Length: 343
Image 1 (cartoon, rainbow, N blue to C red):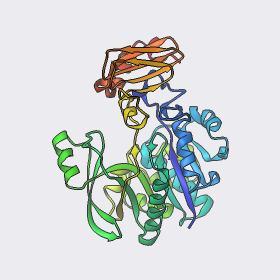
Image 2 (image 1 turned 180 degrees about the horizontal axis):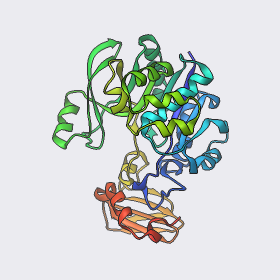
Image 3 (image 1 turned 90 degrees about the vertical axis):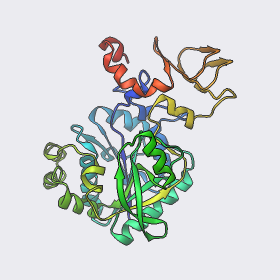
Image 4 (image 1 turned 135 degrees about the vertical axis):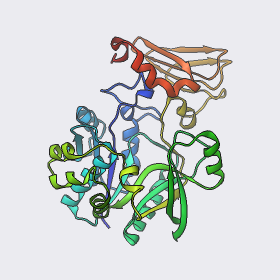
């Protein structure tokens, strides 16, 4: 079996403003450890898939920055999307490129560049099992995460009939439920829709041709990325392919996955001090609890405060609450351009 990794590394990550900017989005930031999220992702995948069979899809303006972060990656494997067109188009173009280089039977392991994984070895083992399933059953395999909380920000998958070991058919998808529904689904054994997908490139393209008129015409463009993205309509792969297909299996995964979506999420993935504070940089916390602090170039002192997010960078300081940290996109859109776009 020939395995390829496809890493989606576009987007800005405005919920990590002011640290994250268009030229330095969150996937290029060291939000969890000493390396960027993208570098961590490529390091995790390296024992499973070599750099020459790893594709990174990103914005045109980030190609040079990604090349610096990932010097082992062949330059032709950093693919610049001409415009944002949704995950179906991005993964479909990656699939056509893999087929062009390695044939229909090559397996794609699709991940995002901005995750934290606590147990990389178990993660890789599950991906290998998913790849075997994809080949054995000609299936589109999702690695669904065993939930640790009733999170309303994720999509959920209801597993159906058992197919092979602990792999099951997908009974249905549920998009971002309310709190009560999420609590019920966690009790009933639903899984988070992680965005970890594994399939043979040819099988995926066949399903797009059969089920996804929004993207299928673009497949005629072949390796011409400009024509491909000009012909593709934007649609998420969950909606455009997976919810329409009868060939989808879900395999449960439990390896400390986190999507690192907001400043508040760093309390789950960073090492905490005795007060439960998640800090980076020169931070001094006194009688303070449950804060997230990122001090870039300035010292930050906390005294007698709880559940705050404090970010300093380049003469700009953000102070909000852990609860409101998920709303930063709205805040950024309301700010004057001179503040919002400060690099």
